[in-house]
Image (cartoon, rainbow over all chains, first blue to last red; front, side, top):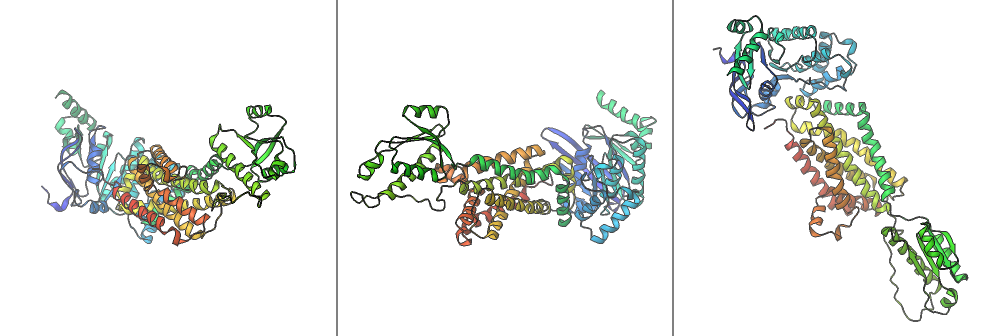
Length: 248
Length: 366
């Protein structure tokens, strides 16, 4: 096992119940620093619940977890400063301009005015959005919004970024472009924790876990999982797993 | 951190015509509607007169009645049979019957009876008409017969201080202002927070390192400014359209509005904690603010005549104190020496409610 220094996210039997329903059941996993970790599962498998616990939005019912070395129970405030988050509904204000959104989040994360100015210029150049910087977010295409939200979620240089189905509703080409951005960030040392139900995206991850009914059913590199199930694609791995549980 | 949040909130408001409409259209509309609908003041009420005397005195009494501005002559009747008919057609609200030899009897110190027949189908208007007419007749009698009283007679003379004309603006402008301000202000904060919940941006705000008090204060400050602007509009309309006096210090009045609005905004934050959609937030604020303010603040019904339990409830309603303050300042021209007690209560309420709203805002779900 790696030493603690290299671990970005670590959970041990992390569980969340809503009444009798167990949304996340004894989740145990480790994510290494700089890793692109794919957190897969069908809708309702407990992905979002687990992610919300790690981000400090939801209190766990039991189990342990540390994010960026901080305890989710006691050090939620420190976790907040070290993570970025992009939700399914992507987190931008539609009635604010592109530039205003960047400035707002810069301010929320406590950046100085000078830093905000630099970051704003950097993000807009990086995303090639000079032409729309003064447009309302509502007016730009979905794929652009997602890329912008991803950049904005990193405005405070977090150590880990949580992406909850960041590419919902766009075509494969746009998704591919989004993933180029993810690779670029991972190359800079950012740890990426991403949920998705697109199996083509699962192939892009360094390692994946597949959740079924609140439990992790498979964990490993896409290569290793495909070998284990003797199939050609992650999509087939997923189908195998789903079949496995239904015969149980 | 706060500056950005406040700036953002202003941009939301400026770019959303709906918020602007709620903010400035609704109070104006409510004030005018409530103002005209709730006004119990009587002007030019149509009356019928059956004058069986037709002498100098009976004419003098009539002219006194019609010069008061409260009544106007709709119909002159010739005989008693016409009275019922004039009421049935709904043309008149009151009939005055002056008996034969009115002046003669009056001059000879005899007892004279005039008859007032009032349409009491609308009880409030009926009573008001009767009171007005009685007062005018009593006045007339005193002016005609100041010396010739057979013996010392104590005539109770009622003087309505602060509201000599019994003008209803004195009670409805403060009441409606209190109602409109609390409705609009609580709605604004509850709806904007609910909107962020709907859009999912509340989640992102919750994950950010912003503290709860930043989030609450970032919501309250922009709307505090706007609600104060609203208060100013309401005062101006009250004074110009409804002839409300403004005897006291306008700055003290605005300061009081600020406190009251703060209470309302904090209530809005509290509502938004339970409401997950904008609609829910809007209806909850409307229902939870409207009825208590309307019924228990002393606006429509005097607190003194309420049962003990309701009196206690009225003590925790912010409007109770705000109405008291507005009346003291605008009508009596009082300063802090007159309003420090309700002011203290409002300040205490504002402090407690803001603290509770910060405490109970959920950035993490249990």
